[in-house]
Image (cartoon, rainbow, N blue to C red; front, side):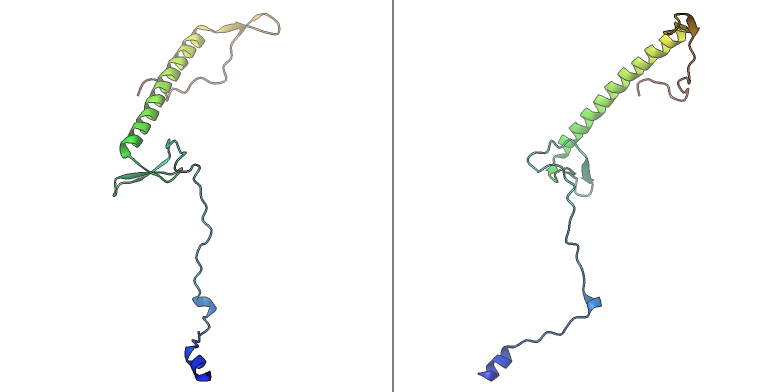
Length: 128
């Protein structure tokens, strides 16, 4: 019986400390949504070699045409917004050109308007 137990015993050599490899055990999950609750509004991770798009918020693989539609809607919104704001700036500039004096709120006398700065000439609002 003693001989049988000696044959079944496997001995392990102690490993050196420098031979040990450590693996990263904590992974930080930066995703905001679960796969079923995400609106997929971006940001996106594009893989050109596989022609696939991944939602960074939830990790779902998306249809590239859906993503293209989302990006086109955002672009159209910003184009409309830029046109509205450039028109507003144009109206303000026309009003300021005509106004050189205003009534003082303290004394009630007419006084000259002193502007700190004018709009930079390097940027001209308009459609792009």
